[in-house]
Figure 1 (cartoon, rainbow, N blue to C red):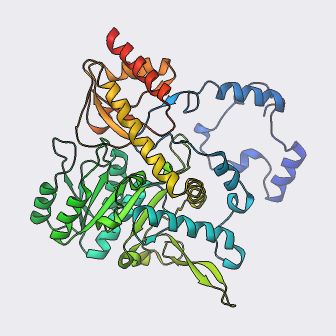
Figure 2 (tube, one colour; figure 1 turned 120 degrees about the horizontal axis):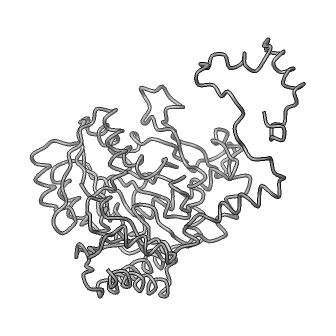
Length: 452
């Protein structure tokens, strides 16, 4: 053991602990570990530092990282760099929210229950469906839950999905469905980059499925014709689920109003920072008659013994609460703190602010597309309407372009190879990109293309 290490136990204290459990040495404690893989000498660690020296060292190491604050970020692929008002952190860092546990005792948890109820109400209004859980683990697992809900409701272990799903979401869906013995039928996208309603209708005529899952915008950023696709599903008598970027509701009719049966999605876009992949938030909403198949918690407004308004968990059909074989899901984790973040974020925006942000995203997206297409050899891959994200055909090597942009403090997007479109660049635009940011992106983009 290092003489100046951080271990707080003295030799006397360690010996007392060993004696209490009937052992004579630390080696006896670890005797079950094979000798061949045990450490034979102390680790070569640097000298211990004082607290202020260590903090300075760690901050210096952290300063070597590139992140969405040091760079202009055009990364997407399902997670996006949105502005988060400072009030969100201020509210959710309160101890009542930050350290709250499952609100089994409603008389002790009215504040937490109320804000989760308000989260459900907000998401319900955004997606246009009455039943929302609070909450699911992330967008990918929410999609997996949607598939299982459809299978349970229709008693048929087969679902159809669009090829336009995020690759990561599709891998989670495949894993989840394999364990449930659910067959997945994939419907390819058309040359326009979207799912053809006629192709969907044809597949549903030829193959019996419980339902179908479509993503909009899809993995190319293209907005799907949800109304026509849903009509094809209804004609075939199957359920229709939409994996959805909820910002679209600031510009268009909600999925529920279009007749969609189930909605899932990634809630990171509502007040949750990019954090190297997580934590995140899964959005999940269904028609009222599908509630019995929905996993997770549902918070309801009830009355206390005096008749006053109150809140309680009215449904919680999760594995940890009921026998495994009767559980609606075996993915128990929920993201209550991030659901609270989203509720606070959406309350700060209000309905007008929500529509304004969605409009800003759309206008800035098309401004950047128009500017980039003026660069020789650069072209939008698909002409169908897009939102928030788009796929570009570029005349240069994609990784070289991205490295060049990174030297200019710009994360320029994702290699299109991730969505099986090599030679393309997937670029995401959010409301926090100024005109100067967008023009700088175009300038450095043009610089690399011209020099290549």
